[in-house]
Image (tube, rainbow, N blue to C red; front, top):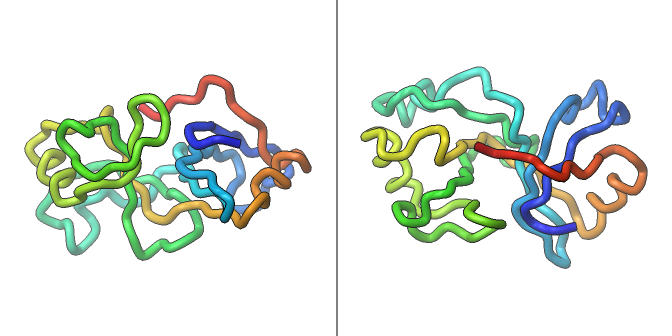
Length: 146
């Protein structure tokens, strides 16, 4: 299990939040794993959130059932967004959110560069590995974020 992996839910997760979802894992350590559902659009756009009503319309994704009070983001523009943590290849998680919003609003950054999430997915130590072993998740060899 490594950061940068994609996982796809199996029918064992039907009738749950994870039915027909694909995950992108952003962190794996001795405490567990963290990631985001990358194929489930949130029903509202970024500018429909009260605090961002002056921003442009931008897709939001339903990242997971944990901490749905906060926004998270994955991007591939470390040249513009400082402070991101490298995940795999040219993909970073987090960083200077104010800078990200500024570059989104002036269209320097597009939906091909950044993905915004409400909530995230989290697992305790070895919990996700157990879910893979029981057949709830399948590893996707060539997943794609953008």
